[in-house]
Length: 102
Image (cartoon, rainbow, N blue to C red; front, top):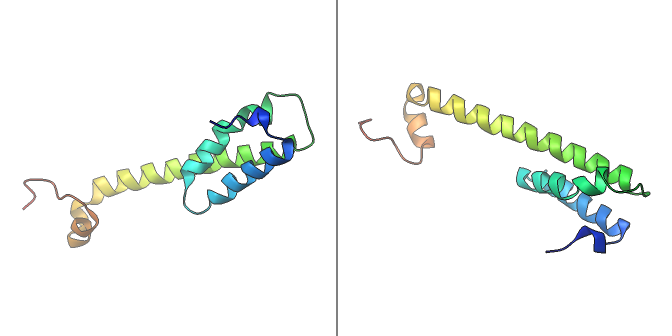
């Protein structure tokens, strides 16, 4: 596994930026990884010039992760509660139709 301590501050910032931008491609898992992996570099180590930018990407990645989790949970709960009322559309969106439905 790559350790961030072996990377230069510029390389750390570049990696953090790439993970942040890749998260916009509907990959919220990358935002989660970015927030966890760079947390120490953003908040726990002695200050260095690129730290403020890394901190910004880490905070935004964490916020993006939380927003995606809320959206996914809201969709899941809404779909599970309203699936029978959606009729054929609900069945079309369901991968496996529950037994006893028909």
